[in-house]
Length: 66
Image 1 (spheres, rainbow, N blue to C red):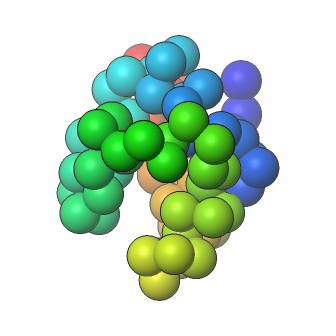
Image 2: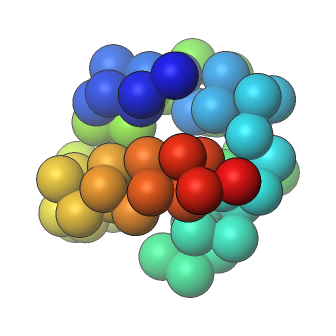
């Protein structure tokens, strides 16, 4: 599965719990945040002033190499 900007944070964490290390590196507590139930990657990136393309690249690289 390749993640996109519209992929749900909850779905990502359920299917690929190892991505939490990337979220933590960005200072995100997605695994403990109730908003993960309804937010997608684009929303998280915008709300936290993150480069969405870089975040997607890092997440996709991690899940493809595991």
